[in-house]
Image (cartoon, rainbow, N blue to C red; front, side):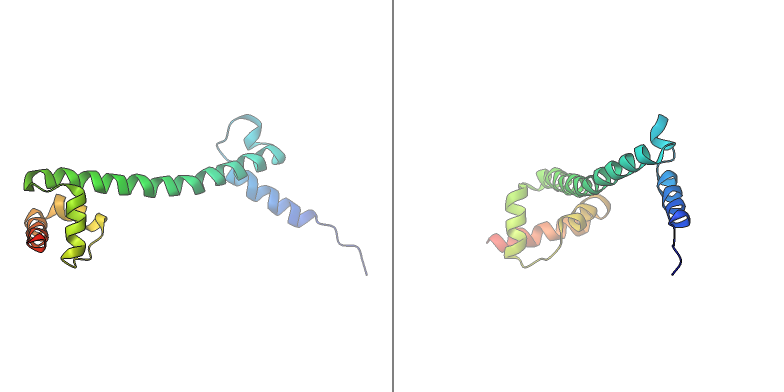
Length: 118
């Protein structure tokens, strides 16, 4: 059997990594080894960043709900407890959207929650 060298596949890999590293500073966008290090690190940060974004969004929804509930006389923790008592299965994102965009619907949810306590 003839010997197969890895030139074409290596070149393809190098161009792929260098394309991903486009815009990085200095040798991180020009040299394969430095670019590969930078791309791997960037991938790890991107993965973690997606987790942090979800955490931040949940925190934002809770803050919005808390702000919308201050006018109704309920606090956030009692409201969430009341949702489970009233068997209302809306997540925090949807409740937050209701509080901002459809105030009447949100008020009706709050009334149902208040009735569940009685």
